Image (cartoon, rainbow, N blue to C red; front, side, top):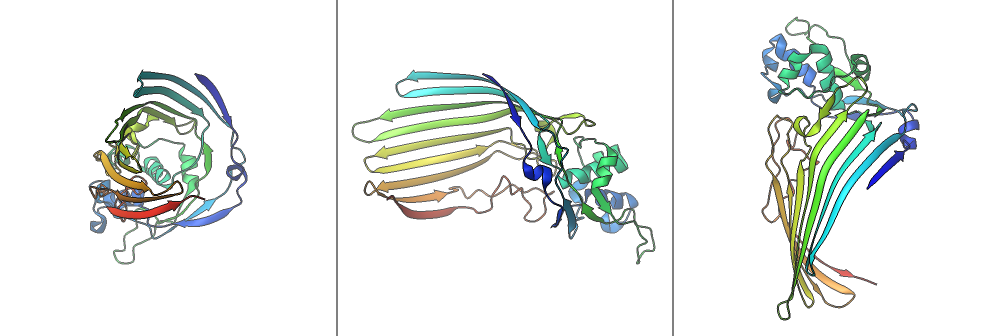
Length: 330
């Protein structure tokens, strides 16, 4: 299949009134680099993993952008469905999604890194341990970041290498392009017996083959999977269910593939398992008991993250927990 898409920017993106708020405990990578190069022993850092330069708060200023253009896209898909027999089937979908002028709000971390690249060039990029900071028009970047002027340190009498980061003005922008390539597949198998119930097996997987992004017209194209942090390459699910008369039990497993972490390392695949059993007391009432995170799997630590030192968008520190209850339908 092939399709074209069109999406006008949300009204909020276009006409949001001026507002402000605060970002707390953001790491100022630029300040860390500047002080490390100045030789200040209190800020000695060989690379970004040793940075502890967090800001108490940064005031953010927000507004709509009435110059946004519409998003446009093209979608290509090739799918296969194979009914292997009466009890099993396999589906495979390969796809390519290309978006032009995709709308998003700028990340303050990305702006901070781009500021460092504008001020210090390749030396800053080397300090950050990677070559994936997207180059951008420095006049735009500097207009988004507000810093105090560098002043003389009261204790040492030396001129500070850089002023404090006070404000940031991230805007809604049209990204020049965003492209996804991937393959999804799933397999379903069913076994029916006369005396011991029915068994259901489901396996599914989603693989991102490539993600390409061009941030704006002055940026080079980057390949996310090898350069961006916390972009998973794949995710798999598996479930095994047993149903016998009014009883059912399901074991569910979720595997998140490896990702590049903020501290420059690569995460291990993260697997979470759950089990749930239920009993249908009547057509309107069922009782259930479940155990979540059977292995009590904890988040993977990332030295670049502020407290609690892990990426909360992908990992949870909740640990193993139990739940029980009933559902009544009326």
